[in-house]
Every structure is written in structure tokens, then in C-alpha cells.
Image 1 (cartoon, each protein chain N blue to C red):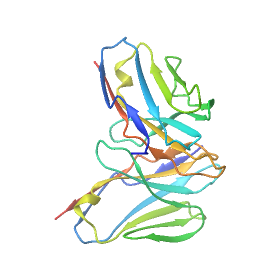
Image 2 (image 1 turned 45 degrees about the horizontal axis):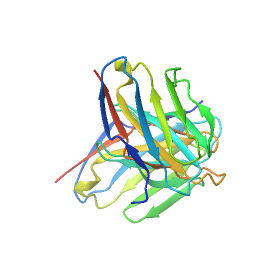
Image 3 (image 1 turned 135 degrees about the vertical axis):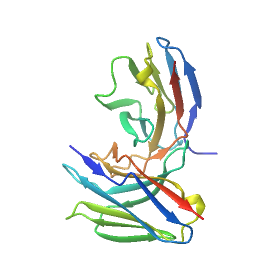
Length: 115
Length: 109
């Protein structure tokens, strides 16, 4: 399978713990995006990378959230001191980054439950 | 800013045709995407419109009117597997997507 992959698929944690999610984009894609989705809502943008550079962060991304893409390939999203409000599906997407509004392809997501 | 509106839920019967509408307001327009999302799964790309008119792709068609800030997704010959959420989205610049809340389509026998 050469699509976007995410690990883990599910994560249950206690409030106050740190969690880290991983995303592996489609190999030739140089743009990578993180979104968050709660029940009954569309995905909300969190941050995106062009190669290894983090070009934009949403106001939704508090200082407890950090994302990296160290070699311009896979990316990690870390949430420190998790809160119950962080419970959501975290989606990763990638695109070629051809300069136009290129199509984003999504991974299966990581469902986070904070108890 | 960007604002996208679409109906919350629609129902239809197998074999029928359904039209899912989307209205948008954007500070700059770079096209409109439609995605399909089954429960618990990732959104999958359906269509992208940047010019006015109808684009047909098998059983699915998408229409855009830039002057009206309006798009619709037309699904023909509905099948049970078409039960899903349909998301309308516009790009902000050339990168991030702003999504509507999605329209949950329920197809009944």
C-alpha cells in the first residue's frame, strides 16, 4: 500500500500524559498536513510542512502541541499534558505541492481518547 | 476569512439521484474540493472544480458557480455503499483546506 499511513490508529491516555503520533506520507509528496476532526465536524487545519519546513500553524495549535518533519519525510505530532478536550481524530494528509491547489490525500487517522 | 455551509443530513433511496449543496464565502478563491468520508475512515478525494460548470466522473458529478459562491455534488444511481459524509472544502491560498461540517447521506433500500 503506497498511501498515507498513520500510527497508532487508536490511543487511549490519561489526562496529563504526553502522546506522540506518526504520519508517513506518500513518498513523492513534499507537503504534509495535520488536521483534527471531532464528531459531526469537518477536519480542522492544525499545521503544514513543505519538505522539512513548518510553514503555517493554526491558532488551534496551542503551545502543548508540537509537530516535526525532520528529514522532509515522516512527521510526528506530539501533545503534551493532554486534556479531555484533545480527544479527537487526528488526520494527516499529503500532497505533491505542485504550486496549485493540489489534491490532499488523507491517512486513516489516529483516534485519541483522553480519560 | 472562509465560511462554508452545507446541509447536515440528507436521506435518499437506493437507485435514486441526490444533490448535495455547498455555499462558500472566501477571501480568495482557488477552487473547491469534494471529499467522501465513511464513518471512522479517512476522507477520500472525489472532485476538484476551479472553473464554472459541471464535471462528470462516473456516477458522481460536481458543479461550480463562482459568481454565486455555490457548488453541488450530484450522485446518481445511489448504492448503499454511498452512505457516508460528504465534505465540501476550499483551499486557503495554495495549501491548507477549510472544510464544511459535512453532509451525512443515508441511503436506504
